[in-house]
View 1 (cartoon, rainbow, N blue to C red):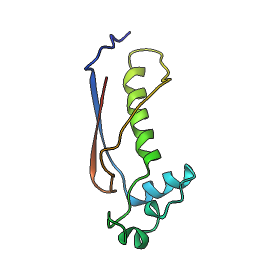
View 2: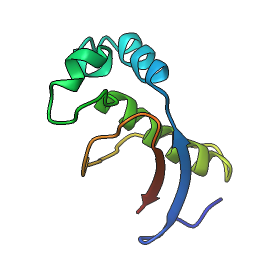
View 3: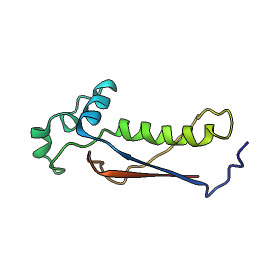
View 4: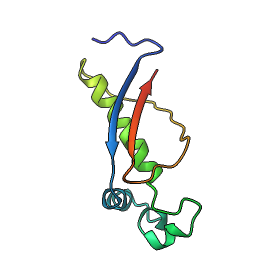
Length: 99
């Protein structure tokens, strides 16, 4: 069993491409053109496609589940996250989880 204490940190890296971003958003029911339509996205303040918040949240939840399940049986009942900025496909994202 893992000794869970405040300050515990774990991390992962991910790079998404525009196809993965679009497919995930569609699977989640998010049809915002900022995740699917490069021409639409080019006219926004981001200038290109961005990943959906649902996608980013699922990656963070997956990181947490993967980390803690290495140490024993677990389920996550409560999570909190705050997005500091958007994620644009093809940029490496470094996930950092902490308690």
